[in-house]
Every structure is written in C-alpha cells, then in structure tokens.
Image 1 (cartoon, rainbow, N blue to C red):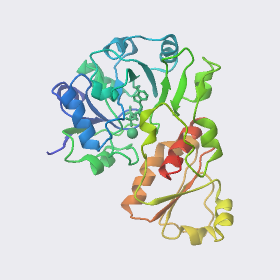
Image 2 (spheres, rainbow, N blue to C red):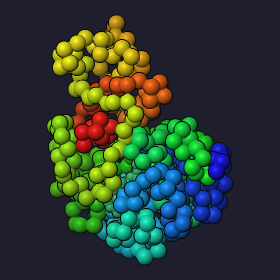
Image 3 (cartoon, rainbow, N blue to C red):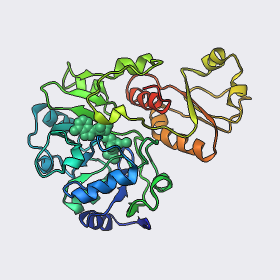
Length: 334
Ligand code: TXA
Ligand code: MG
C-alpha cells in the first residue's frame, strides 16, 4: 500500500469516514486515526502498529458536548476536568457506550475520551463527524512521533495516508485520568499535571509520581489500572542510560564525561562542558523544550546509529514528572 501525503483536513476526514487509516498531528504527539465505530478500520490500527490487542485506544471527539458518541455516562469528575482542561492534552476514562467497538476498548467496559486543542486535529474531527480512535502513530514499543517525517519512518506503506503538517506540540502524550469513581485517579502523567487536577480534586490519587521521583532500579510492579502501561514503551534501538546531572554521571561511571559520550548521544538540561564531544549532543533550554524535543532526539540518535544515549532525568515536578516517566520507560526501568 502506498501511503499518501495529504495537505487537506477535509480529505483526511473523508478518508476516515471511508474506513481508512490516516495519521494526523495533535497538540501532544501524532495519532493514527480510524473510525471508532468501524471494527474493520480499528483492526487495521492494531495490525499497522503491531499493537497488543489488550491495549485499548483513546477516542477523540471534536467537542466535549459529543461525549455521548463514546461514553454512556459523564461522571461529575469528568465533567469538572473537561470543563477545566478540554480542549487540551487530557484524556478521561468513563463507562463506555454500546456503539464503540469492543476492539477500541480491548474488551473493557470503560472508554478513554479526549478533545484535542490542536486546530488541525479539530478541523479533521469536526469534518469527520464520527468518533475517532487514535493511538500514538508509531510502531508499538517505539518512541512516539512529533513530526510527520518520523511517522513515515515507522509506518510508510502500512497506513493509507498522513496529514503532512508539523504543528508545535507538547511532545508527550495526554494525561490519562480514570473518572469512573468520585475521586479521579491519574493513570498516565502528561502536560496537565497532578497539581492541576488537585486544584479541582484535592484528594485525587496517582499511582505513579512517587515511583517516578525515586527512579527505582527495578520495575515496581504497581497496578496502574491503565492496561497499556504494562507493555514496553518509547524504546529506541540504542541503549538508554539515565543520569540526574552531568557531574554525577562522570562520578558514577568512573570516567570523564567526554570519554563516556564520544560516539554516543547525550541530551540534558545542564550546560554541556566545553571539551565534551558527543556524536549527538543537545542541551535543552527548559523542561518544556526538553519534553517537546525528547522523542525526536531519541529517533535522531537511532538514525545516526549510536549505541548509547545518555539522558538527563527531568526534575520530578510539573511536566518534568511526565517527561521523567517517559525517560524511565525509554530506559526499560518502568
Ligand atoms: O496524547 C495522546 O493521548 C495521544 C494522541 C494521539 O491523542 N494518544 C495516545 O494513545 O497516546 P496511546 O494509545 O499511545 O495511549 C493510550 C493510553 C494507553 O496507556 C491505554 O492503555 C490507555 O490510554 N487507555 C485507553 N483506554 C483506556 C481505558 N478504557 N482504561 C484505562 N486506560 C485506557
Ligand atoms: Mg503510544
């Protein structure tokens, strides 16, 4: 199959209504979109990505008022969070409605819904007028994509079309919040932080933040309630080694930073010492820029076939907590 590069959101929407697989940008990462009510189309998502069938998909809607297209009930906590943060990088988990394919929800009786704020995504959804299932547009287990060129590296020939636009993104997937109980539970950290959620629900729980802050050496075996998180994620081909700061890296590894990094890649927030030579080195100016550029950095390191990527862990608060979660997973620790 030849993957067609599209410029028109209307064309993308028409193809989605026809049951095609179309990669589209969002304000978080690229999504691999299909009609959530069409079981054949949804099946094609799992095949194209090589995605395990027990990992449910997020349903994307143009507007929060359309929740009935996917959910059977809008709980109080979901209503509050959608009012506060949608459209935007938040996904709420609700009891599912009957018209959503069982394939989308991986047999669960709940469904995850999200209203993207990216104007391009919004125009596709508004023109399609159907609920759109979309996981991140990457081969299963690989880093997500923040450019259409990266999507094609993974999925060219495996999907029908791609909307070739590169909007500015947060660079990390949406915050996923289980809203089936009275108190929301954070299942996956993202740009909407646990502090943002606790401004509305002071006793909102999260299974992840202490684990992520502590940088455990082994998998903690916590039940995150989010089925996808038990599978490997965000793994480049290169080995990922984590460090808290550059001075500690050389102490820990009994070698100078430049010895460690020659021929390797290194991304950090710290200033890169003069004399340090990497095959690929990047200092990000802020945690936000680090989050936005992290996946593309991993992918660029793989393009250059480096063996090791040294990654400075993000500080464990704000969007840094979400980035740190992805970094630990990229290294195979979570
Ligand atoms: O930002 C995003 O959320 C991107 C863009 C494309 O919207 N999408 C995305 O999808 O990251 P994906 O499939 O890569 O991740 C979806 C996550 C998985 O961890 C999955 O297990 C969880 O959402 N999820 C989906 N439905 C769920 C449900 N009913 N209950 C609990 N977790 C669910
Ligand atoms: Mg994904």
